[in-house]
Image (cartoon, rainbow, N blue to C red):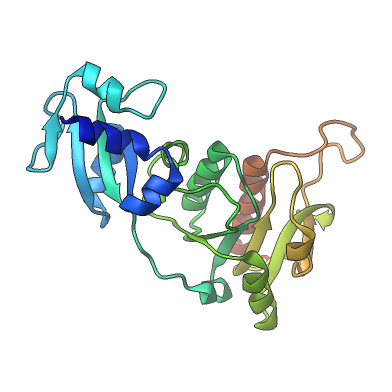
Length: 250
């Protein structure tokens, strides 16, 4: 393992370096095993022992892995992976459920939302440019491999949402002044917009939300937390969409 390789791996903690090199870092043998079986291209694997074999695999010592790892607790293997270039198809929201994220900035939240999307069969997430980078090492690890199956695209949300409304695609969003999620009519296709951790959905994007939803506390008149974490709120909303549409209840 050369000094240049260590510098390359360490530099990939920074988005600019990821963009310039076209690479991201994945850690852990289970995750890398999933990567190897996917269509993504692995440039190189560093591992302790004989976890992997092949011309692109290099065995390193535990000390070297500590120098390479971008995690607080180094794993047993690390891979350099080429960032996939997937075409953005905005029309997918006309036939399936799509998540849109408006400035979700916490890497852990974004990683969890990607994992949730995978769990609930949502194949596309559309993010504002101000949303955390999905190939940030913290995001990648938080997805637990879901980043391999969920497409994440970055674009300006206002034109995307405006175009969806023009085409009659339902646009939902979560708001404190919205109607009860559990009684509001829901569809099996459309866009579900989730907002920033502290400020929610921007006013510009909110103009294109056709149905505002609210997750009620229990009991309804209880005075408690002001709001839910965005990842938890996404889980609740996705679960209700899938429960109702899977059961044939519109």
